[in-house]
Length: 282
Image (cartoon, rainbow, N blue to C red; front, side):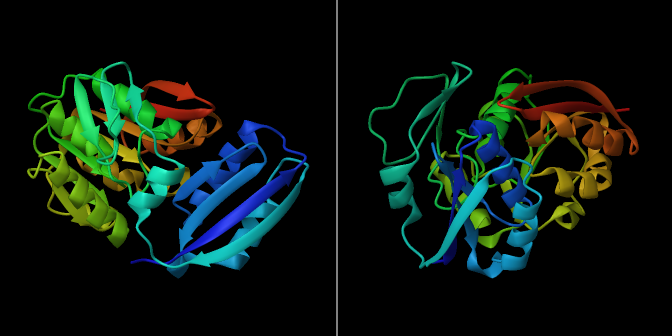
């Protein structure tokens, strides 16, 4: 099992929920992959292989809120992450009144048109975070039947799974982290969609994958803007790209990078300052 560093950040005084959202975004840029906010701060998790205290120092130095940040880090040996999520964090949710997301250990499950089982372990993407639920909402509103889809940075595989449930084919899901990749493979099997091609790698892993009708990336601003040219080259003319993992304030930066490689701005949705940007390849 993979070992993690658990980082606890307490903010004094607590500026508000926006502060923990911003912290999560900043920590995501340096490798952290799971976040649990509360009334006094944030608990975040990063693989021990990616733990970099100097990068953490630099990130916290850029934190714009005028407050004291008390921090404590602890190495956590590999454990049954399903048990951890069941005990502490993950509860069933309904997205768009049509899609229920729950884990295999849940028994009291709301009924919905699309029933997705996610055993998250330490991978990101249960539908609870605004970025995931925003893209789920977009996919629920699209006609995906017979349309090909690429899910970049698939995490738990949740977005690829919903797309397959709604008739998208073929579906390719790409994940750079080996443990998240293994988790996505498990979740794809649990939901009965073995046809989803779950690929281990970064954007270079798209070599040989045909251009898709829909391209989804829920990662972070820096990765997206760095790889946007590759993303665009794997989207058909007239195809739709959904990008999330960043704030509404970041739209001008992401939009400029996208328009430079032939993507046209269409619209965006937002929740709690997080956004999902919709683009079309021209």
